[in-house]
Length: 213
Image (cartoon, rainbow, N blue to C red):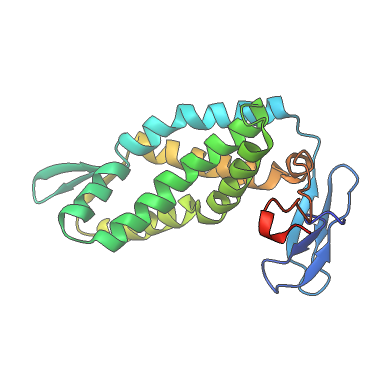
């Protein structure tokens, strides 16, 4: 039986491509659209763990520290990521608030947790390993801190003419967390972890007594 993970789909043009083992520090690109597919790096699990632990240390500051300070019409106010999400919920913007919560909080945190579980060996049993790998695959597509930061910067450019705006420490932490997540997306290669999962048998013994001869 062939390995089901030896064939991958190009995320840009849906071309089926056979996955091959690359030399260190080499990248594979789609032959049709030249989309980057995967690479092979010399990163060890301990180095991935160091990146994820750094991400965990950045989370409280990125989510709860003020991103910006505003002074408008003599009134001082501050905004952080979690407060902004709660404000959207309070204004009945449930869809927008849920999307920001998922893409800017839950998905980046889940990506860190998933990579940490894989690199540290917490997910050793094959069924838990498969579940963690599938979760990381979902989180890596939905972790969009860069979209949130760009939207925040656009809002800042509009506010700077009508209010006194100062940047907060949370924005720096959020930017560092974004760069760290992007680094994990580039350096993390799930292929060695998929290789640890045994292939299931194509057929299983039939235990139905009515089917026996």
